[in-house]
Image 1 (cartoon, rainbow, N blue to C red):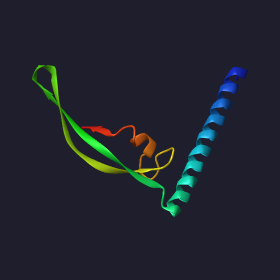
Image 2: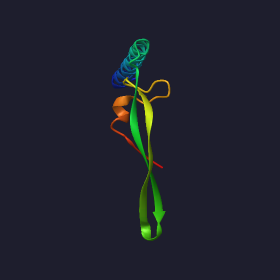
Image 3: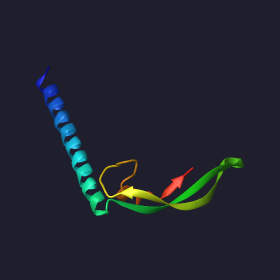
Image 4: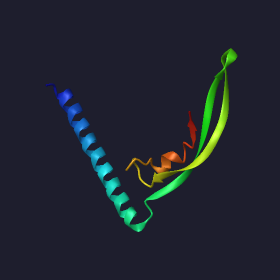
Length: 94
């Protein structure tokens, strides 16, 4: 193997280890927040329906709103999206 390829593989390995470490630390912090009762929040999500019409037109209808549970973390945990991401993406298209 060349020196260049070794350097790339080493950097990728260090990056993967760093990512796993950050994920595990995020999970530990979330478990601590669960014991305090501050691990989860909720965000209001607006649902929209896009219907194709004649003449290459589209009709957009709001079908309703609902509260979605989110986790106060960097990554998704336990099937819940992070609150920081969900607060920026409140529209759900069907």
